Amino acid sequence: MKRNILVTGGAGFIGSHLVRLLVNKYPEYRIVNLDKLTYAGNLANLRDVEGRPNYAFVKADICDFPAMQRVFAEYQIDGVIHLAAESHVDRSIKDPFSFAQTNVMGTLSLLQSAKLAWEGNYDGKLFYHVSTDEVYGSLQPDGGFFTERTKYEPHSPYSASKASSDHFVRAYHDTYGLPVKISNCSNNYGSYQFPEKLIPLFINNIRHNKPLPVYGKGENVRDWLFVEDHARAIDLIFHEGEIGETYNIGGFNEWKNIDLIRVVIKVTDRLLGRPEGASDKLITYVADRAGHDARYAIDSTKLKEELGWEPALHFEEGIEKTVKWYLENQEWLDGVTSGDYQMYYENMYGKES
Image (cartoon, rainbow, N blue to C red; front, side, top):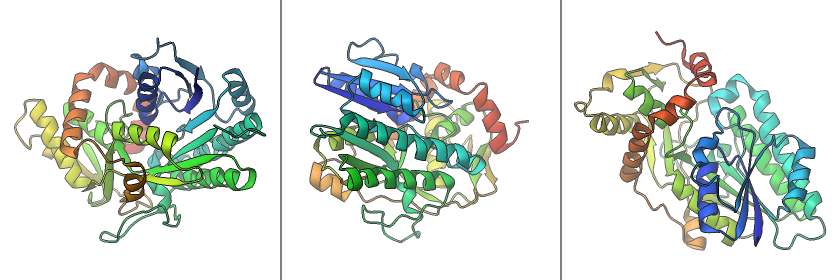
């Protein structure tokens, strides 16, 4: 094999889209998908590539340092794309320790494993860390965009843990010369997303005529990025980005939460054959999230000008494609919305009547 690339968190939402792209695009690479298979990791996301000769799956915890060392040795890993993380702000508010353990110590375990495996020969090696725009904090409603030079100002335990992991990645580059790259992305949407996140949660609830919980007044603004566009950006940065650099990946696509929700309602109702606005009555305003950032918006100019990337899909197309996928894959949704998910949902939003 020409390269042996370890993708952590490859059974998750973004990770599975990236693994699929890499396995199909680079038959000469061996793609090693490492995932702990917690609630958000689902091997059913990758049924279409699991039989490929250039694909391997390893069930392991990135916090298990000896296990990570074994994986690097056994598969002769020369590139890492690190996505494995606890990633939901609400969960981090309830359980900050898990976020610090996985996102900080897990990243450190991988960095040290890479350093020890590659020490003395960093040629052709790369540790690529996938992070979030939430590390930058919050923007004013009319207050510019996050750039790669924006100072870090995390507000939630989740964003604090990701900021810390970013700092460790840069520290390994500055201290040991480890070849690294970092990208910070905006909110992703698309198929195979665990339905704790806004868009799949609301599609599923609309289908079942369940309440649509909206924090505060729904005026928080987010930039939305189609997950397949994100996977393309990661591939491009991995192969062509500069060592030691950070790249912001955004969708150039800002929406107030309540406006986005109305778009999701409109498309879902239409595809379900319901009258327009039929599900508006499901909108239920709930107490605002603690420390809820007002606005995120990413400036991807650097990525566009230096590497030629821009989103391929307009939001209207992306949301249509996304809603259709969830409505046509009810079996997948049913599989992930049982058991642990049900307990989590009740814990976050209260027991359904």
